[in-house]
Length: 354
Image 1 (spheres, helix red, strand yellow):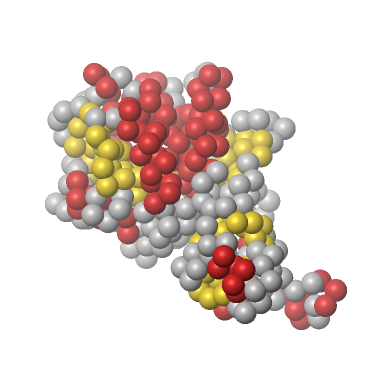
Image 2 (tube, rainbow, N blue to C red):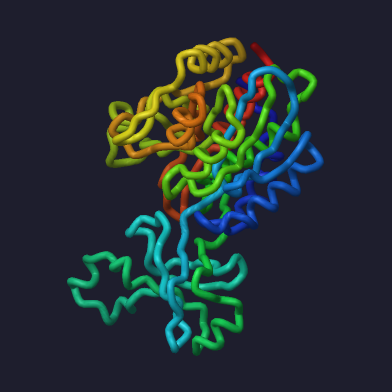
């Protein structure tokens, strides 16, 4: 399949716009409002459900199809402020290895650093161990609690890694924090902007959901509010095409290989693709020469909104489509834009063809 440079460039600009916004789990309203402003002129209706998910009706008639992409990211909540002006924080999903000495942004506008003991003062034992999550603090350069509060910091304020978008020497490959799941959100917004609504075969809704990273909560609320017949979770997925992992055996998805279709997902509770959804997805990819990577992630903790959705309401025919990314849940996630364009093309076909 050939990818038009115009589509690649448009997707990059859409994605960069979303990546600049900080929205850790539980603090997604700024992102939701931003997407609502974009979607409003393009959609039939834009509204919030009772939980706070942004629900966008694209149009169409027939069976109700919901495409879901979560808008939360990993980050920190402020639990206290010291008399000296340091912000003691609790992490939201951030891996222990990705905590210390990182630049962050507090409340979407205040520069900060996750503090660490100076290397010259560390003992050999200190250098080997990770920071205790109870000891995480953020330095915003304030000299007192009053100064921090004057900047607008409060208990319950939030922080996320800074915007750090970077294109590699191959400009199709891009790196940034929070590609999980701004990459999926950008696909849905490009779909909304480009799809011919007169050709829709379903009553199509886009759900921009909350709190996926802390338990798939928003998606469960969204499907109980909307009660769709079908849903597709649009997300990213770890790929293992890097040194030290037998990716061909254990996790056969790689950058540049196309959209990933999860045949199963989750660890503990499992979710399996609905057979009718699987048949249509695979058929459309073959008919339109769309690159696709079927993936079974049994044994890996890689769950999406689909796991939290398909057994809700009256039961939903579900599927998961994802964009492969390296270095998942780190501040330096890496993806290939062409995989996102493959996903976009598949979704365009899915919603306009039987």
